[in-house]
Image (cartoon, rainbow, N blue to C red; front, side, top):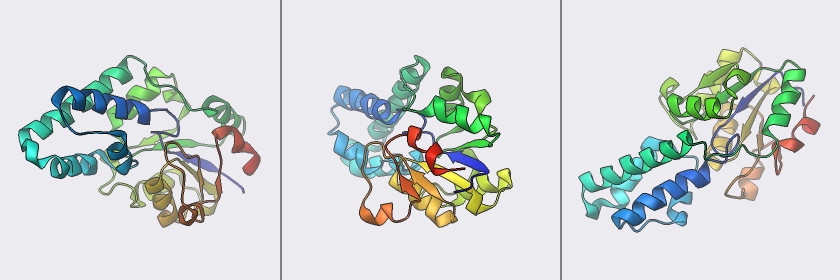
Length: 217
């Protein structure tokens, strides 16, 4: 496919953050006695922070609102502390793929449901901020993935045709958002394998970003 711009998701696509989010929350949950586990974490993979937190208030309602809020706040701070310490690894093939795009002068945008200060922190910690032309974050949209708003906003900023814009995603909600936007998406699954129904909504599914250059021109 012909590509004139690439839109990157961040968590689980550029950075191996999902395991950090989980382990930080599990540490706090164990400390507070919350019945939290990886299956619960995976239920909300690719969902906005606000939606995850609202679900936690429902699931753990018997602990009381203030206690649940403390779990959320402490988990969030524990995650940021780990990010600040540089405990997040780049996903396989990120640097090589960025080099490939730069050789072809193809613009690159990060479009993440995360908050801008978190995106900036991770990019700066990994010396990648200067390698992206723009950032679109939760603050720039009203509706989180799987709503297509964030990708439509990024594509509008790029000024490219949808058919010549490529989205790279790792999660179900991200693929659904790209599909809803009518923009081609290549999935690089992180923690969860895609269903056949989801796979049908992608241009391709690859095991790492190393495989993407062969699919575009």
